[in-house]
Length: 138
Image (tube, rainbow, N blue to C red; front, side):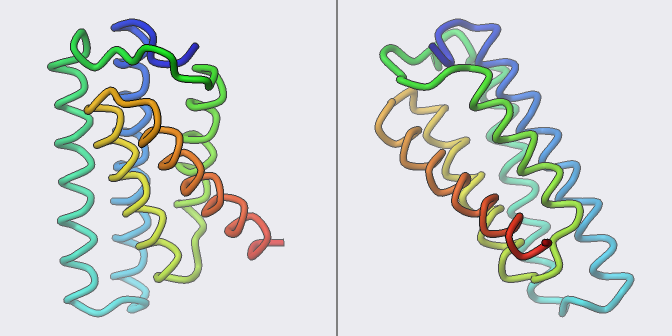
């Protein structure tokens, strides 16, 4: 079962931080390549900072973020976030980039709330984003 102990919550926070790192790298590339305007870039920088804050909150409060009854495996959650991190690096459409970031923020917030239903809903959204991005890159 996922997020069933402090170590698993910390592992989720690690992966969310890695996603924030990928967001930053992709955003810097978009800025250099003039793929994005200043307002959209600022919005994404703010989302990146929010994602890092949520990950930091999970680290700090990991013991209180343990989830009971989450019907997902820890591996499936970590694998999904890893896949999202890799997709972030190659996203071509900025709108898809923004959507994935928003869904990752919702996932991090749901994990912090330690409520299974919102976590599952957020995982579904991230999975759909990743699947759509995988289709776009083929």
